Every structure is written in structure tokens, then in C-alpha cells.
Length: 200
Image (tube, rainbow, N blue to C red):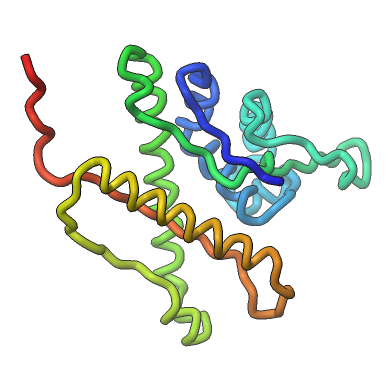
């Protein structure tokens, strides 16, 4: 069964690896399309094969991707896949006493924001090529604001996680019809306004 992977202060190396824009795009791509060769990934991202190969090896060093030798047709062909993980998480406050970890985690999160924004742009640019039911079922909206405490926001996020997990299980246990597609759900929540003053 796929598990969640938490990246904490001991995973600074993995966070540094993910802070590179191309590596973040590669990780997201293999998580979405499944196993792929370096050639397939290079074609998708319009990058030289040698560059893709180097960055995939860097991701593999931190167990973010892994080789799939059984798919290779010869010794030169190398297939890669996303290490089966339902989600990657990090808790920013864990890096409070770790300046290097703060920089690495922040850079990783910024790369994830950039990659997600690029994915949203691709959808909006090409959405009218999809059938009307897919266009209308997809969501690009801003919801809120809600007046919540930090504890209430955490409860909201936990409930949302449970909802996503339920629908993920549904998708895996239902017959694979021709209309069933991979769907990505991107969520972002943040407090508005300046941070509260800290006691002296």
C-alpha cells in the first residue's frame, strides 16, 4: 500500500534536490504519467537526454524516483518511476532552528508553486479541446475568506485529506472505464494579513 512521506529536518538533501525547477517538474511528471524513459521525459520537457538523466539520478539518490529495470528492452534503455507515495508533506515549523532547512524547504515549496501554476496554465490554455463535461467539472476558483483559528484550519485540512483519500480509494476500486482519467487536486490555504506580534 502506498504511504505518505514526510520530509523533515533530516531530509535537507531531498529538499535541496527538489528546489531545482527541472527536478520538481520531473518528479511531478513521473508521478502523473507513470514509468517513463529518459527519452520520453526529455521529449515532454524539451530538454537534452543527458540533462534529464543527470537530474533523475539526483532524485533517485533521495529515494524520490527509482529505476524499473524490468521494463528495459536492452541495457541502454533506462525506465524511471515515482517511488510509490500518496503524498509528500513537510511541516514548516519543524525548521524553526534550522536556517539551512528553512531555505531548502521554502525553495522546494516555491518550486512546487511554480510547477502547479504552469500546470494550471496548460489546462486553461487547452481546456476547450476537452468535452464540455470535463470543462465544467474542473475547478479553478478562489474560495473564502473564512474566519478560523489555526486549530480550526488544521481540522479543515484534515477533513479535506479524508475526503481526497476516500475518492482516491473509490477511483482505484472502480472499473476502469474509458472516461476515467487521472485528476490532480491542488489545494492552498493561508492566513491573510500580517503575522501576529510575538510576545517579547
